[in-house]
Image (cartoon, rainbow, N blue to C red; front, side, top):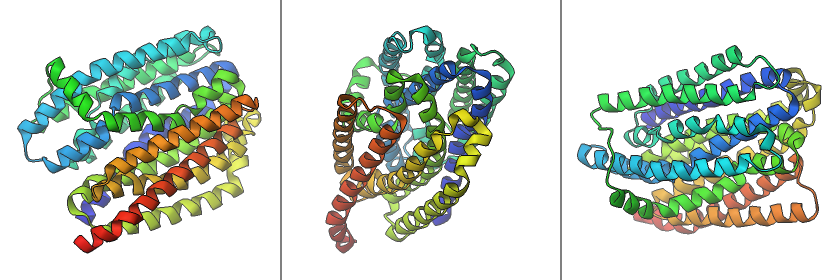
Length: 408
């Protein structure tokens, strides 16, 4: 069972790295080809596409994964769940696309609206990726391979197509094509595993949305301090958004690896409740992150200048804060849905996110009133919020873990 968790962790880490490494590799090329405002608009639009996936996910990556892990041998049940989720996604995609359109016509972004509109297909394609199915079944190896291949395709397409300083929209179009191919393969393999691609009635979908609403609102709250930061910065300064986006890509690459640990151990802990395995994962990867941060502080500034150019030097100060945030985020996630869900207190994980969202809004309001919305101030606000959420979850976990240990 421990080997199964390790195998799934490696598979998810590979997938997540292949999700984020191509954009990281692509960034130095884009910073040199696109003018800075065009680049900033591209990165803001990409952030919106990624953020939209959190919204269209609606918490299914948690709720559906949990339910599938408990009913993985009941094909009829899982097919029914697939149908209601796929129908629910229609409404969620329409909402997100409407938000994208509204943001694209804001004064700061209006001249770059076509860049935002080029990401609409990417929103639809990525929203239907059934990763929650593969996580619940603990069959992530194949999913990682073909999804990773589609991300590499995005890298090649962008290099091939983007040649002028106003070709930013082609970055989003290539992202759409790669996501479309990834979705086609995902659904094909799903059918090969014996599951059906289908849709339910609107009534059934509505019931499912209500059932999963607590997870959705917690995801919305998490969007505030995990994915909307660059969009907020960009609304006040496209140049600051560009600096923040460069730093954020490094942070997201690290987060991609750490999230693979929590995502792979989540269904395992729900079913097996092996706390020795859980604590080993927490300690080992926390120490690994701290070691990585120490190394980064020695070489990070020169690395950013070499890769992105001297005009992005300020991104190093932002990334310094973000790498510390990465440790807090990892511990927060592990003691969130993974730990609290395993002792039947998953609602507290949702409460912690709601509280974190409120705190972040308060910090943004303070920055706005003091006219201090910059890349660094935003990074500090995210760090404070992540620390708060981690402490909240750890306190609740320790409160209930003693009783759980006695029961076992």
